[in-house]
Length: 135
Image (tube, rainbow, N blue to C red; front, side, top):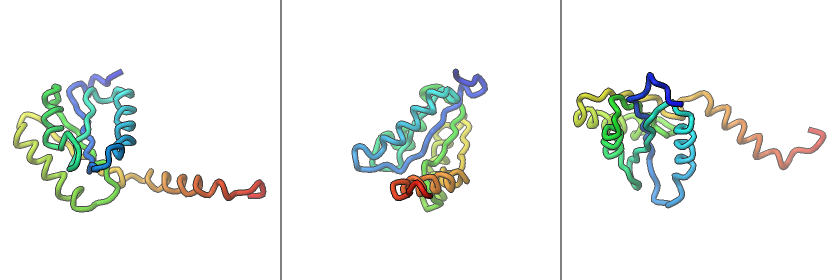
């Protein structure tokens, strides 16, 4: 069920994009899981390059669906130029095009301490075939 306090809020996931056709499938699965949870009535991806919709078009799409607030979260692991300069610049341009819309930029995915837990879990999973009953 959608949280009524977020009824006019869009979650915009900012993604780099890839020329490989199936490269974004995992990200789309994450977005679908978020939609199912119903926290935000509008959940969209916006791509920096290579895929549609590009971030400016995704911003416009969110507004066309009724968003008066857009929470943008970079689907990136590191603080490179895209996270520190390109994405904030694109959101700033979105604010200029839609002055009545509130924008918030959340921290990028890699900023979460949970990334460390995920990395450890992945290494343990990779080692699992090498473990013996004595371990």
